[in-house]
Amino acid sequence: MNPSLEFSQKFVVGYNAACKPLCQELKLPQTALDILLFLVNNPEYKTASDIVEVRKLKANLVSVNVDRLVQEGYLRREAVAGDRRKTLLIGTEKARSVVERGREVQNRFLERLLDHTDQAQRAAFFATLETMSKNLDAIIEGED
Image (cartoon, rainbow, N blue to C red; front, side, top):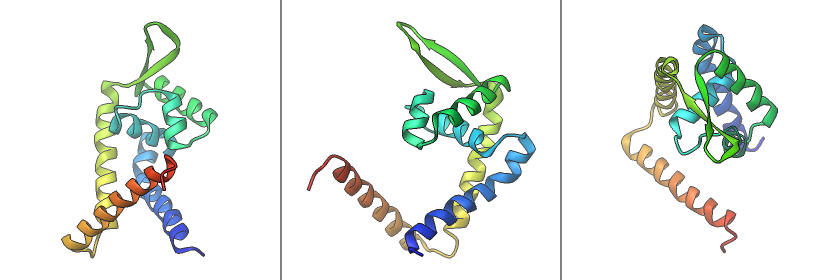
């Protein structure tokens, strides 16, 4: 198996395992928690279309989970003046503690992922990720 493919698969499985106790406690599917955390952690993205486009989730999966988050009081919908087709998704006060706990899970997961690495390795890793991100931007933009 391709090592990078194996890593990406393990990453997702590991992250989901880290989130599982919180999801079970809240009786929320992993996708619903992911959507809630995505919206709050990335305030520049505010719509279901943003979630579909950026997270590459199927529209029907986003729709079902957003509906659930709204029904359970974690999100509210807000119409955009002048564009009745566009609806913003806003985290509610009820979502605050869930988001805080979700962020704690994310931070513990990252720390666990980086166990047995020193500061120099971490700095090199994050610098490499930044360079790769810039390279990907160039590829996407069609630059040579």
